[in-house]
Length: 474
Image (cartoon, rainbow, N blue to C red):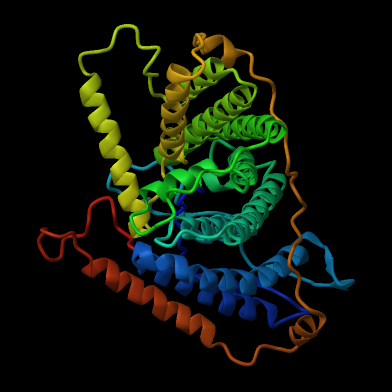
């Protein structure tokens, strides 16, 4: 399922100290007001419990959508572009230096990355747009969590949820593609991970892989049949799972291979930066594994529909290898630690179930263990059929996996539409600013942040000692 991004936070900043406008003198101050609202919203969101953050995402999205048109209006003014055929004159007093906390950079275990000061308005735009893409991904994630509720959703409800989540992921892909085109000339040696073009190309590929798998999940009954059988509150577990037509099984396999290719590009792009967190890298790797295993399963379903049960079981064995688990039938010399490995696998699967029940930190394996359950469900079913009805030899799985065809895309990257200020709002910006309380408010916020840093201590440490390596909490 979509990666659980952490939303970044930012330090206070007043545009009035950096820029001025002769044509729209109220624009810097109004943009500062909306930036301050976004800053406070992100701080409050960070303090919430993981279970409460999903319901707060709409508030964060609203704050981003309100601030972004003003920020992009300043960006257009500095670039000499027009908005609704109206020129915005922006002059720099000094270089814009916003501070943002990177949430996908690699850090020491137990440490939180500190805020990093950047130079230029592009730094601010990149982080705000990155945050917007993360919110869209998290909204898709919160939608998909409803599929694992105690009450099994109907087919219509499931379709609606998956379609909504797909739209969010495609929006995230469009935003990452737009950021990637903006930061092509950024110096990769000194830039933050969020400002690198290759990072956003990789994150865009990750969102495309997830949306492609959702197109398969919409018509794939087996994950829901397995989830339904584990749901203690469900009473319809005896219903026979629907059959998948032969043509669609082969099509789904090609779509899964396309998702695996996108996930592989994401993994390569994130690894190339060398500064991305291990959790994100592991997720991209597991997503590729799960996608290829799904492709093997659908090729197995296609073979089983043709009456080739032995070949279908071989495809499942190949899928288990793609997931990183040894196949039961291909283990010629079982290890002495096989029982311990099975216990570890079962414990990990149960721990993932607990995460789904709590609604926090679930899906970090990118659906890898969920696909393993489906694989085991079909393997038990087909093995019983093969042993009792039509006994067939089970061929090796490696040649089958090695000769899989190429993938087939179903989605394409749509262009990102830059939000722009309305004509009426833009006309209001021509008036001079009414008050100058924004700078005083930001100074008060800075002083309160300094006081909070002085009073922050780690549990068990002596009062007055600042947390080493974690100087800034907000």
